[in-house]
Length: 182
Image 1 (cartoon, rainbow, N blue to C red):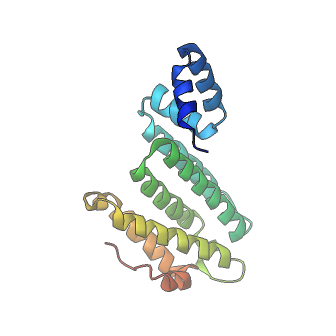
Image 2: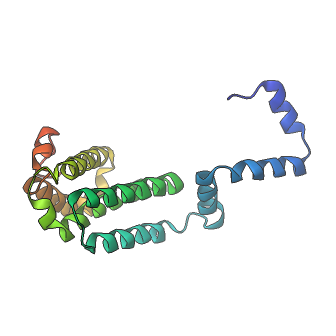
């Protein structure tokens, strides 16, 4: 809802102490804003790598676990995708978004390769999810500064090899995901 000009002027004219109280009450109602302000104002933006490393540690721990089915594994991957999205909203870390997404997919392939090898009714949803995630990743990489390609080249190629040799391969063909990168 947009503020009327008259209300804007009245708010600006309020005593500073009252504006501060209002601001603090409003900020407290938005969890994402609170996290972003903590990152920017308290951590001064210096904890990006620590935040990435924390997400990687959690991904690795879960990827090493025994999963009952590809469906349960996909749910874990979706949870981590949400964590990555939240990381991006808080830090604006575009490089980290690509790095963490590659890490997520690659780590699950490395530790759950057997479960992802064959495409069947149990692995179909997971296969589609992985292919769509990889397709989105490839589109983001295409828009990313090519100077960083060398940082991702080996891992992206390994990921593409997994995608084209495991259960997501039919979806990868449909989405026209390349077999080689760049």
